[in-house]
Length: 284
Ligand code: PLP
Image 1 (cartoon, rainbow, N blue to C red):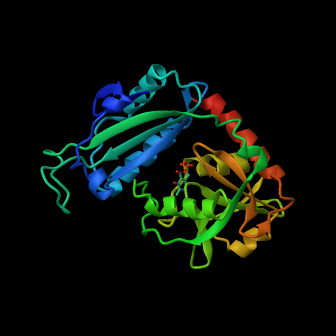
Image 2: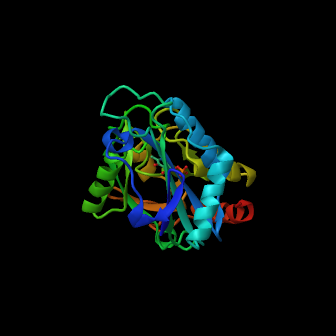
């Protein structure tokens, strides 16, 4: 694989980042994952805008312009013959001369930019047909989940708790209500209505969430943005999650409760179809 590191395209085993990089020492960095279908980028603009916002919230400088970022994404797709999968992008606050809690002067310490590709079947992922099982866990993450930081230890632990329990993922719960999945936004469907938690600093503002809710409304489906409990979810007709690389993924079990018939529901299936259709049409 050819990866991108600070201005250079290099074979992955030659890519280097300083041990003093604050991404490595302090998880001081942000990221984005943009999916690729038929060699093209899905909703690049959405991801670029969220990246800009994450950087601003952390007072971090963008190392390149959005146009340059697009060019780098495309160059990596070409160099790696990427047809379907994702492009991971990470910006960290760079490597000051020494470890220090205070942010370094950006004029002296440029931020680091890393991108790499991941070839993967997205449109025909098996989980779309079977659905996934989730467990519920307490959400103990920090209070700025709207910023897409590389601080992913608790979501990783959640994924491991799910694996140990024989499930696929975990839904996190705070003050009795579901916030989101470890790496996706969470939804339920009841009486034809799509319910998902409202945007705030408590969840990541999913790019796929925004697209799916827009498409649902365009298809005359009813949408309600509010929190819900695990009990309400267990009693729902359907459940699903969304993220850039899984699109719309049905959830068929939450803890010990089977959702609906235990197979992907019609609304989740329809939203997945509509989302993939539109993504293919609009990819750049
Ligand atoms: N919520 C969390 C915690 C995530 O990590 C992600 C994606 O990685 C999402 C939601 C979904 O966001 P998006 O649709 O932009 O991929």
